[in-house]
Amino acid sequence: MRHTAVLALGGNALTPPDQDGAWERQRANAVPLARAAAALLRAGWRVAISHGNGPQVGALALQQEEAGSGVAAQPLFAVGAMTQGQIGSLLALALDEVCGGGVSVVSVVTHVVVADAPGGAMPTKPIGPFYPRERALELAGERGWAVVDDAGRGWRRVVASPEPLDIVEAGAVRDLVEGGHLVIACGGGGIPVTRREGRLEGVEAVVDKDLAAWRLAVELEAGVLALVTGVDCVCLDHGTPGQRAITEMSVAESDELARAGHFPPGSMGPKVAAARRFVRDGGELAVITSAEHVLEAVEGRHGTRIVAGTGTATASA
Amino acid sequence: MRHTAVLALGGNALTPPDQDGAWERQRANAVPLARAAAALLRAGWRVAISHGNGPQVGALALQQEEAGSGVAAQPLFAVGAMTQGQIGSLLALALDEVCGGGVSVVSVVTHVVVADAPGGAMPTKPIGPFYPRERALELAGERGWAVVDDAGRGWRRVVASPEPLDIVEAGAVRDLVEGGHLVIACGGGGIPVTRREGRLEGVEAVVDKDLAAWRLAVELEAGVLALVTGVDCVCLDHGTPGQRAITEMSVAESDELARAGHFPPGSMGPKVAAARRFVRDGGELAVITSAEHVLEAVEGRHGTRIVAGTGTATASA
Image 1 (cartoon, helix red, strand yellow):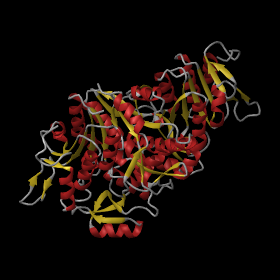
Image 2 (cartoon, each protein chain N blue to C red; image 1 turned 180 degrees about the vertical axis):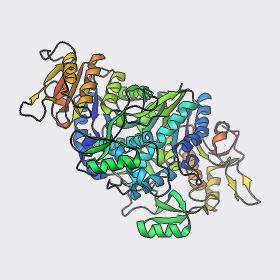
Image 3 (cartoon, chains in turn yellow, cyan; image 1 turned 90 degrees about the vertical axis):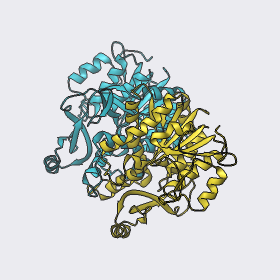
Image 4 (spheres, each protein chain N blue to C red; image 1 turned 60 degrees about the horizontal axis):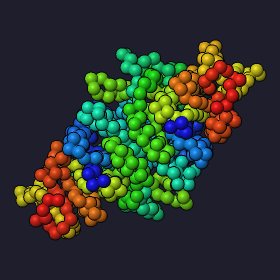
């Protein structure tokens, strides 16, 4: 399915740090994301979408913990499943609107098999609201959270984020994409599960959605993986006077720049890693860009392209 | 797709009134339901499953309302969407276990178009926990809920429950069922939406899952609709010394008995209504039975059969 594009959308694009996650706000924020997918469809691409859920899973986990009514709080992977329903519905409604109702959009509840780490993996994935340092440390004490300073924007809870190995519903998603449906899958990185004695068991974690999108793109044998973010392209020395935009980089170059610390974890790091893995696994093109420029980026006229071959001199495919 | 069976499972079967909805309990309660579907699959049926969400959507709505952290509570239809992710995942994991991993199970986030009632429909659908009468009236005052005595089992919040007219994702579900996937759809009756000026808008309601299963069965041109409940068959004068089991009834008979008040709203009423509508719309057989007896009931050896034709003397198809 070479003419298939997988889009990875951020949960922060639906709920930025300065918003409280009201449904109507998220719905409005979904429109530019839906337009990106619609532009690809109009240009003849088959499209599958994955999305993040950091703010949403954090909010819902908080609501579960704080309720006083004696109804049982659900485990983190089940809360992740809830956000697949919530955001999957919201994106489907936005896509229906933007595509004028003429496209079959379908959100699939998706499980992702992750490596089984006895005792749990290191907490690295920030979820939920931002707190002042003092409040974050207080919550860490009260609730047993791990907390970190998230890229200087404030303190957040962090949870384990194991590697995605396999997508349980890959066959169904593939059939739907081949059948011409626009599919939303691997929401929030997928519901993390591991197989123990023949039984799929939930794992208390949130998988990185860019890495889940990489797995999805590989499973679908997609031609393009587009990692959508708040900026138009990847920059070196981002936010400094010496900032330079990267138009194209090879797998080897991206690897080198990553090792030199150019792509911070939790923001550009996983996007570049997902792009690199996709191209290394035989994908034709990975692009990192903003929602506004997805079609141009997929067509090689915008964003940052990660390609096979030897470097920035690589011609467009 | 004559050899397709649609199963409607109750949300109460996962969380009975005396349980608090802990995930592991719901997961354990899902096993007999999953076994019913697995038995049909082994007998050569294609299967689609819909499920209720009364306890789950009520619990989650409470958790949303009661949280004190300043994250926005989501509207009821979005909370319904969340329960599709939660229960869709839980049932998929139980089915994977029971079917030994050899079956492709997929949960689809499903929207159901409902009639647009200006000012909202009458609240008739009980959701969430049971309360003593005094506490229910207190909550009604505090939170603007409508509350009712739910079949003598306690007081509950009730919400609007409009008629399902159309399933937005019907084409995708049909493609999946035809492709041999076991599909979970229309969870919690489907996410209720209405089309206004070309845009699908959420409706503050919970659709009856038995009626949604009827729509799903019609859309799939299923041969059988099986409405799974806590009892083995429909009874007249249920719970009295004169109680009689119904083995078979025609559409006309079921209509007559319903009008005579034999099937209470919120329990057997919607099941018999869904069964009657399915057969009236050309469905071959509708059965009402317990999870243990689904295959036997579908094969005409158990439960209550609602059939076309003239009455209890109707031979098995």
